[in-house]
Length: 271
Image 1 (cartoon, rainbow, N blue to C red):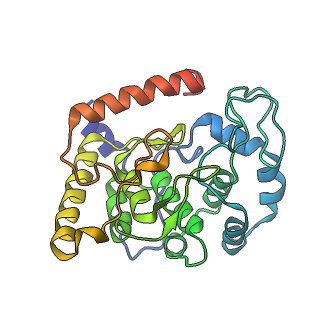
Image 2 (cartoon, one colour):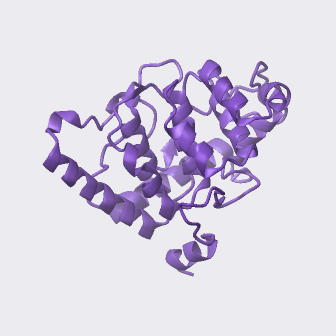
């Protein structure tokens, strides 16, 4: 079966933009999260005890505002550390884990609420914290059909709001660079986003290139703040290559590298 055929079978029936109910693409039980990260989220006292008490969308948004300071899946320095405890402690038997981050605990909490289209748009346009907005973009990346991703992100490709996704800081970038990275990269701070089928990835890169051409024609070049090349962790040069030509050999090389690292870090059984 070709990748196009496989994708067409996985993709749910298209829902109109006027509908408030969002489809969930992929694995509805796991939110398409890495099994190791999901196990640590579900086993953490923060998720099981504290977040369990939060029942509404607005309560969770308030928690994001006060608690989320970065967007990595693991707290700084805890990766591959067994026996950690704390607010987001790892679970027994998951030795390759660490302390799962507050951001990913809250991302999964949002998923348990099964957000509506209006609620997701509320996250993307929230004015109180860039981390509230970023979790909205991550929610889309993990749960929405790949063919719909560009439409979700198109209005934010040149967003200038500053955000630092790295645990411990030192990786300041913009929301625009962040969403560009989500469109063209699989890698996200030692974990992977859901795969985008190659034909859809090609369309996305073509649309990005066209967007960049239109932006260059209407605005001074200094206004575009893509790049974010100082993000440091693997694959986090947010926005780099966003307008470049589609390169199948580069994509294949990236996928092999991601697969090799995923097997090394998480083990074949986790995959």
